[in-house]
Length: 289
Image (cartoon, rainbow, N blue to C red):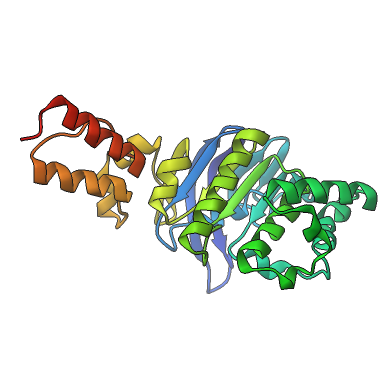
């Protein structure tokens, strides 16, 4: 399910004294089954864009097409419910939306709300719980007895149980320790690969953007500033620096080591593992003084 933004603008509280332009001139094509990262400072328009993906917001001008669904300024889309089944959104701290007395009931709530029978919803709940790496016996537990990381996985399972084609992640690892962050990001990448999900990740974490994304979209002051592969984006460090965005740690370390050693390391070093391999390859060439 491809997604396109065509000359999209959104203004909050349009026509009032409090009117504010959040995004403008957004032209974007997101291909099915690819992994995208959206980066930019707070206020750059990231959250506004992703809220257009399942109809929480509609453009004040322009058009958003999500597969067969069309969101157009001044035209009300009547099929928002099926759209929201196809586009699952994981907002920050999704565990705060848990409310049922058992994990199973919480995961079943979404599918049943979309007309799935209770029996089928329970089957989907088991599958979804397994996808997020929790054992079946958790179905009978209260979600409020679980750890924070486990609660977040249950909330994500509730979204996966609706069998979306697109998974939108808004700072999904916020508040987790480094191990929890790594595990959750690994989970999303595995789902992307194994389930063929289109993933759109909103993040301030440059390491995650570099490691996982096929393409990165850089927003600045409400519009698209740069778009390209991680290697293309992070090669433009001066432009990123000009808008206050940093490079991934691996590239920062690479620059530091090149300056200290007086050599040019091989490759792009988008991850620390890549950097280690590049250092070893450079040492093996004998070019280090």
